[in-house]
Image (tube, rainbow, N blue to C red; front, side, top):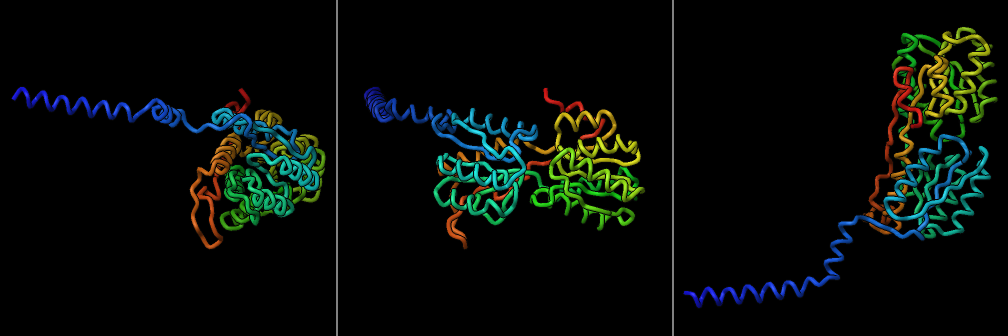
Length: 336
């Protein structure tokens, strides 16, 4: 019996020696690398392209982009048109494509003007994802941003609460930009469908400019003395409209709902000039844009065969969400 036990012991020892020799250090190292997570190379550069590149709105988006780059061990760059000028943004995008980066995250100023350039990049093997403002008919892989129609609907519900479900309102927007078009559509259709005692009187172009938006607000208040509210679909214009309300001594008579959380907007909420603003998930836009681009560049997103050929299985649309900011919670949105 003892001999049999000894024989089994020899067999087990031999088996363990074979196993130990099979899992050499190189293979153990590969398991360590898996545990370390996804990592790229610092020479692997991804580029974010916007418009009006110096405005505060882009800062949290870029921060999310940079945070993802740090997590993945890659580098990023930031480019964009300095003005609200689609031709300038097109030129910047073409310059970025010529550099052949690992991927491009783009906020399209206009829904169709950049389509040819986006498609050119994708066809050259440079993945492109869109954030904040899209280009629906392009070959970009995904859009990450606010569900702008629902954001407009949220503004309509907030106005109904402020005005007791009745009253005349106006809109100041950027009519050529897709995300703003969707906000206006959601706002108008929600009011028309759910609040029959409310009426949208006018829609004006504020051109994303304080002075132009201020003048547009002055005009609409002059033309409609019974106006009770103005919905502004972007932050810079919201500040301009707030200035007009103060100058015309209509504070408290005309309510403002704006967009985004730049300091000027938040200060006006604290002062009771702007009633509410819609805060977007801007950090999410930047962070997940880079994560998507990384997966596309490294071909980590599986492909599926569809009617249009092979397609990467990433979500085509990601809603990064909105929250309503009022005087009650405004302190939570100042930069810490």
